[in-house]
Image 1 (cartoon, rainbow, N blue to C red):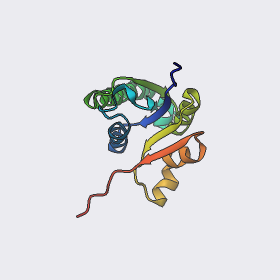
Image 2 (cartoon, helix red, strand yellow):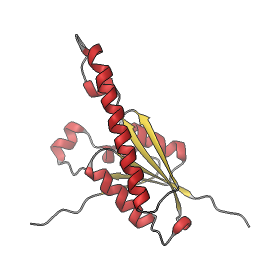
Image 3 (cartoon, rainbow, N blue to C red):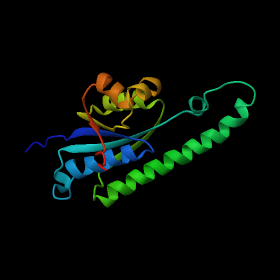
Image 4 (spheres, helix red, strand yellow):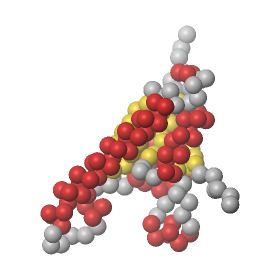
Length: 162
């Protein structure tokens, strides 16, 4: 009997509560313990580590001395984010996960991960920026929705009503 290869689901993470929520939501809805290894998807969790030079954003006197410290901090943040994601997956009894750490802009890294893994779905969290912040800062989810070669699911945290 032929076995069907599982579709790939890529989940983009960063160090925000929004991406943590998106990962937890995805695990709860697509990788429940009742499914066990019968989940329809293979899970790939991707963290895009910014380069030190893009994080510093300046060149000039003193830049060369600052970059090694920034790079060290970015590596520590990346390790912490990946470990937190691993802990989240473990707590939800999801063990068949690939974790990738890729240096670059999150928009490009996630779209390239979709292509690399031939993913069917890309999941990203929404920071909930308004139009002005989104225009200034850019929106990873908006970019991916327009450029990723697969279905993009944007997971929003529920608003707390007062």
